[in-house]
Structures are given as structure tokens and as C-alpha cells.
Image (cartoon, rainbow, N blue to C red):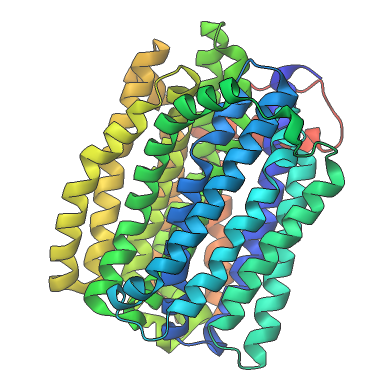
Length: 487
């Protein structure tokens, strides 16, 4: 299979696994919203913030550094594995020491034990580093996709079971740790690559840290920015508001941002291979932007338009305060997804410092404005700030990536315009339906069904058939039709 076709096949496998995972998680969260309280979600959100930031520290950009390394594979992957395990152990110890102050910061009593419990996942994930890098290096994304689905199934089944038996927020925390463990088991089944002491090398360690350190700083800045809004909501408005905001964040940001994970996971090895072929590299970047916009636009704008229907029908009265936040966060999710391919370009071209420089430039003013917005307008104001700053950052990041690849900004954005317009049209239809019709499950199903039809027809027309051809190609790859090509 040619590299281009293999890349699209990997996108297909990763997209399917992400779609299954997000779909299953969405259904389970809807059920959990009727069983657990916003405060339960708020406690879990606080723990999840700590883990998310810690993961950025423990990875230290090692995954990118290992994949991009030209050293002997067994040496570089084992050296990276030891570094990951050491950093994860250090992070776990620090979290134990800071659990008390973190509980005071979030103003949540007895948060120490939940934070320490969920942080054990750092050690579990570190054990999977070596075999996971082996599967990634060899573009075996089918196997990685299976691990992802196994993790989602474990989380869904366990969280529901424990919640029904009144484990409150512990149902989410225990399920999170168990889900990481199940993923690791699947990865070990598919890869024979193991951590070996004899393969550790000091020179390789220094190279990985030099490359990964700069990359990690960008990732850490991005993670801080991704969690700053939750920090603000939790500290200013309390655990109930944090719980509602976190649930809206999952639906609004995570759903369209599955494309971020897909592109980051699949395209970076491809970019690394094509760095010496400028025209092919440029084409790969353009294809990435088009694919992201094709699938993220309808989800983001559709969800933004249908937010009132979604929350009222599926979540219930305890979550009504999050309707406007969901609309703003859904659009922010589209911007985040569109930024992802540019980040891969920066790293592959040896300019990872651009990631943290750009993020840092937006981070401080965003936090300051978000604090003011939280005090005056609550979580809705914070969500609006996130949307505005993500939009501005996306424009600048795409512009910078276009410069590095020798593309014009107008040329870079032109292929995404048809899908943005079509997605906005679908979202406008969903909004109109939610305003004019009764809010019921039938209304929601009708709005979603017709919205999808509007997007597919209008998107195919405006893109001159590219949407139709790309969808057909992804589907064909699952039937082993390797003769199909992207237009």
C-alpha cells in the first residue's frame, strides 16, 4: 500500500475508533448525568485537570522525539521508555505532596484521596510507552484503534455500574484508571517490543530530552490553556458550576476535537517521512486541513445550533445553565481541531518552539479576561472567551504554518470554506428548529437527520464533489479498495 493510501487508511481506522469511543462515551455521559450530580462531575473534573497537566509533563514530547529520531530503534525506544517511567514516577510523588494544597485551591473538601487515586494512571500509561511507540512507528493504527475502543468500553461499563450502585464521583475515577489499564493490556498483546535495560543509552537520552523538551513545553502550554478555563470556573464559581461546565466542555470540545487526535496520531509519522519532499509535504498539510474541516464543521456548528435541544432533551433540568456554554465551546472545538495539523507541521520541520511561543502569547490575556468574565457572566462568559481566543489563535497558527510550507493563507483556507459554510447552514437549521418546535426527542432526531442531509448535499456541491469523494475513499479503504485516490 502506498504511503498516501496507508495514511488515509490509518485516518479511517483512527476515525472509526474515535467515533465509536466518543459515541459510546456520549451515550454513557447522558445516562450518568441523570444519576450523578453536577458536584460529582466537578470533583472528577478537578482530578482530571491535575492528571491532564501531569501527562503533558511525563510525556515531555518523548513520543514525537522517539518517532522523529534517526538513531537505532531498539535503543531510542527503550531509552524513551525509561525516561517516561522516571518522569511519571516523579509526577506521582509531586501530586501526593501537593494533594492538600490542590484541594484548597479548588475549595473541595477531601479531594486529596481522589487526586492521588486517579494519578496512578500516570504509572500505568508509562508502562505502555514502548509497545505503543512500536505500533505507531510501524503505522499499525488498526491495533491502536482496538486499544482505544477497549478503553472506552471499560470506562463506560464500569462507570455506569458503579454509578448505579451509588459510588458517586468514585465511579468516574475508578473507571478512568481501569480504562487506561485495559488499553495497556491490548497494546501489549499486539506489540512484542518491550522495555530493555541493555538498550538504554545516555547519548540517545540527551537527544530525546533536547528535542522533546522544547516540544513538551509547547504541549504543556497548550494543556494549561486547555484547562485554564476549568481552573477559573472551579475557583471562582465552585464545584457545581465546574461540573456543569466540564460536561459541556466534553460535549463541545471533545466531539469535534476527535479530529485533533486522529491527525496528530496518524499524520506526524507521515510528515516526518515527507520532510525532504516539499511538494508532497505541502499536499499532506492541505489534505489534513480539508479532512479536519470536512468532519469537524458539521459536528461543531450542528451542536452549537442544537445545544438547547441537546441539553433539554438528553441531560435534563440540572444542566440547563450550560446551554449557552455548550454553543460557544462547540465552535471553539472546531477551531482547536483546525489548529492540530499546523502543530504537526511545526514539529516535523524542527520548529516546535513555535507551539509554546504562540500558546504563551494567547494564554496570559485569555486567563485574565476569563477571570473577569467568570465574575460577571459565570461559566457562559468563560466559554465565550475560550471561543474568541481559540478563533484568533487558529487564524494565526494556520497563517504561520502556511508560511513554513510555502503556501498562501488564502490558498490554505480556501478548501475549508465550503465545509464551514455547509456546517454553519446545518447548525442554523438546527437552531431554527429548536426555537420554533417543542423540545422533544423526535425534534432532536429530526434536526440531526435533516442537518446531516443539508451538510452532505451543500458540502458536496460547494466543494465540487470533494466531500463525496473523500467519504467514499475512507469507506472504500475498509473494503480493501486501494485503487481509490484523494482528489
